[in-house]
Image 1 (cartoon, rainbow, N blue to C red):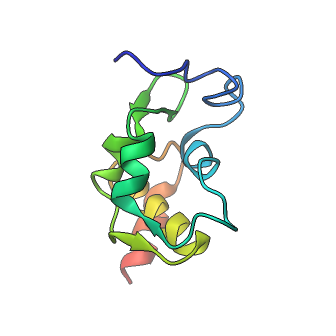
Image 2: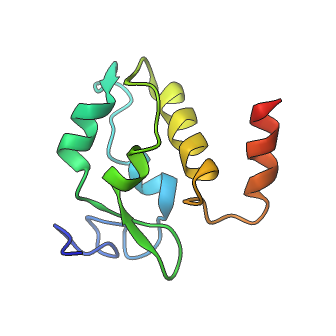
Length: 106
């Protein structure tokens, strides 16, 4: 894919220092962006790259195909929904992530 910026640059993952969920979280301002529309967020950032691990880069839009609900009241709700979608759809590069998916279903 032709990204709008290098996923490992300062605009992407801060020179590979930020991965996955951290890259997405840096795109929102906790004080000013809420309530936040999922569709508006994807419209603005959907083509941006998210490095998941040392091999894999996907778009914000690809991850957000699995994110619910349509709107987030605050930063915590946003984080929870994105994290859940990433864990449940194999976008979370973390050993043991499956145990958290199972715990969320209980």
